[in-house]
Length: 497
Ligand code: BES
Ligand code: MN
Ligand code: ZN
Image (tube, rainbow, N blue to C red; front, top):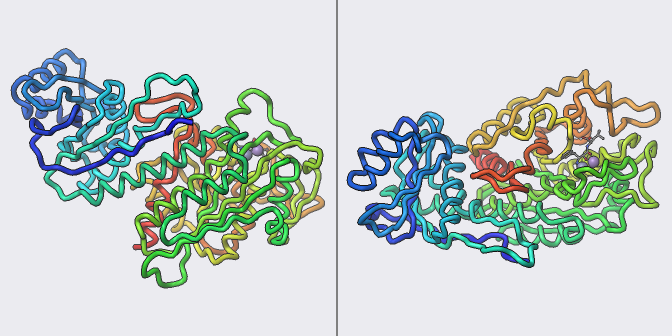
């Protein structure tokens, strides 16, 4: 296995652009700032931008790239990256611009890059540079780690932020967040034969070995002792034993009794069980632990930033397989909470393991819950591959998650949890069924989870549409996206405040 990513050195410098000792300088340009940028860069560089604008080769549209050769500069290349209209240059746009430009630098084999912080957009300097630093790490990702005859692998080694603002701390924080997101992406991309529940638990625990975090991996015997009948019921069909990862974080000076509980779905491969999925596209189901990887990466980053809060991550991990001992359609399982579930479809396994996971987080003292899961195909029908669905109660907590996502530059959209939907969960012979039929499939999945969260604040993020990119984009490699990690970190920052 090759290194899947490299974390570049990142420094902040007040050096003039012409003097920066780097290979390539990135200059962000908003659509409505392109004319003044052409005037600002006088001499040969200004002329090149001027004529590119006249030709229409570059207009400053979002993520548009134009490469020029700056005569008389130490850097041999300049990459102009478009930002679109200035009022749109927020968190998501800045990240995408910086990843797109850094990808262009990698294609041009320029290892030492700089970001000229000239386009303010709508963000403050610290927030902007945090995102740029994160983006440079995200751009330095290569998903061909298992190729034995790889092509040329080229990484950015050094990044300089050219600004007179004092943003060194923000750059360091962004860099660490990018590293956490890349680490999650590596786990999510791993195939099911490499990343079994046992392996995932070990790798996740070692990722989380950061000051302030204690890690516990519960094995199948400990899971049985907790009466987690839902997790065990899903694991029955697999030769691989289940695991329950429990990470607890206590930040410096974290008083009060509020504990943020992050719960993630950790299905290391989802065949559907005896309600077997069709063969076509089943390989994608190696990413069914993306929610679990996300909450681990988020807690790691929260601890690295030493946020003054208490938080935990709980990740139930198992394969969903159709083995000889597998749970059968019609079987009844008893949750750790005591609720009984008629399993009318073994492919609705995520809500089962999360039911026990959410219950356990609450039992361990979590007061405010957020779960992340590749839970339903129905959310892909509703929101496509663009937007994560957010569900939960009470409304102020859901709003807090939505605002955090907005600050993080990640798209989420609220879905309703009206009591009337509960009707669909009815079972003739148990407390509820796990598969309530096609209508409102992502909502009824959330309604099922709601049965395990008690009366406290809880939000559920369904990332089935957003965890995996089918195609590479200039700002996003094909495969695992690492979505919602940034949002969870922003939730934690708000939790501290
Ligand atoms: N892991 C899947 C959901 C999924 C589907 C994720 C497509 C990513 C892309 C989940 O376990 C599942 O199979 N859900 C079923 C539930 C149904 C049986 C009620 C689904 O959505 O079809
Ligand atoms: Mn499934
Ligand atoms: Zn699944």
